[in-house]
Length: 249
Image (cartoon, one colour):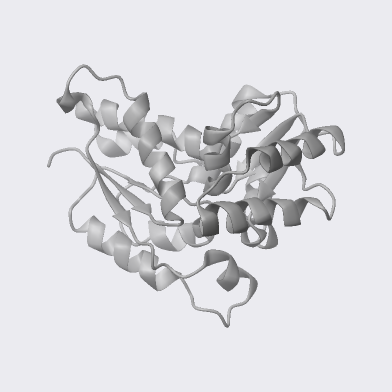
């Protein structure tokens, strides 16, 4: 197969399925051959990311990701994409395993926020406890000189329930709960823009988009970027040149 990219997924599987569905339905097609070429590694056995980030006595998930990336690198994809925010805890280590471009979903999303809302001085963040605990998004937002609002102590339990109890465990999106979280972040904590710092939250946005709030959806953004890069490379652009635009330092 010529000109394909590798998706390091399975974190979780339903969220990865959402990403694949987005790229399949957003690319403009008139025939089968217009779809994108990609290999999906849906490694559902990768240990829990949040558990390890919060407690290093838990199983480290890096070795599994390392094996997946090195295995795919042998096939020489044009670039890597990893539709899991929390797994970017090991982004630098994973990207260093190969000279193949590895997109940073969180960094790309934060720069999209700056482009779309240049006058906003802060952004609300809802995410897994792991992402928040290790400042994964917070650091990226501070790098572009913006502030982060996490909301009050009632927000994280609501977000955790939506991510783990509903989506990961039951495979359902509770749209009412999702909208309630967004409303509280907007009304109670003054967030004009809210960043969805977990791909399960991106799935909630896909399934329950009928709300009036401004969101930055990293999975939706990385899906569009994946399509853009894949088509540029298919049309003859060098992969590293194509990806350079999004390799923010």
